[in-house]
Length: 421
Image (cartoon, rainbow, N blue to C red):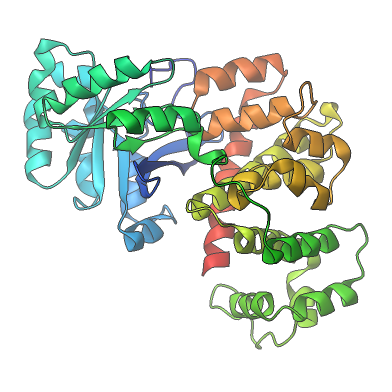
């Protein structure tokens, strides 16, 4: 993506966010990692990523690393000149990591030699951008991956670009693949790696009716979202579901909690954990159980992250008059059509939310909530220039919104890792 100078690199506390990268069968290939801070985020390709990102990942300070390692997927991080010269990529395992650099960095002294050494030591070399400059031929020959945004490009342009890149034996990573049509077009001409919003959208070819399991889970969601719920009845409802009860009791009896006595019943669990915390866990578990898409783990984490982000933005900007809890549900449910391969028109009939929120899920024109959903998407996809414009248009505090995104990333990481543990 083009260099974005509007939002500088973060200072102070940072968290690691990720964008999934898929192969041509929509299987997860790996993740591009980038830092987000409480003041402002740094994009994967803006050349200003804090050097601590590699150290955080390597030291397992990034809690998602073990999951990525276990699944045999790759991670890709951007490095600037100082990071390369200081050998920062060596903080990452060579069998796992792709070292990404801006193509113009290759013209700096010592960088070609350093990249060649990294390549010989087993690291993948990823190049951000492809100008075709003959001065960079040696870099293109060294590259394993060349990452180029394809938004706005026609089929013949992508085909020509791919043929040129194939001449130097590198894979093309198509960035900003924003819809299913773009994915299909790129795959048809031979692109093999994809990054963008396309995976968040339902495939119209495979859309079908919800199965009975999904319907029963949606009905349980309705019950847990009731105002002033009858806790005893809820406990009985949850306890009647053997799978949910088993997962909840296993979760609470894990070492993460360290309760002195085993949790033996759902009533006991509610008393120990508190209904609000338990409800957050149940939401994610129920969505996970409903999911049928192959990209489920990332969609689930993204939905949890988006819900928390919208909630925190609403809390820090109360002049909007939006209910934070309602916005949390909006974000959480916003990917259900993809997760369930079911039209949103059908799904919203089961959801325990007000009509205006259902309209936002259906993407009704002029819906008052849609700008905040669009802002969340900008942050998720590291489109910082677009995010900057939207924050100004919506009169949102830049620092507060950036902090909300950072905190949402951390919250979703913890929640989704715990529920799968």
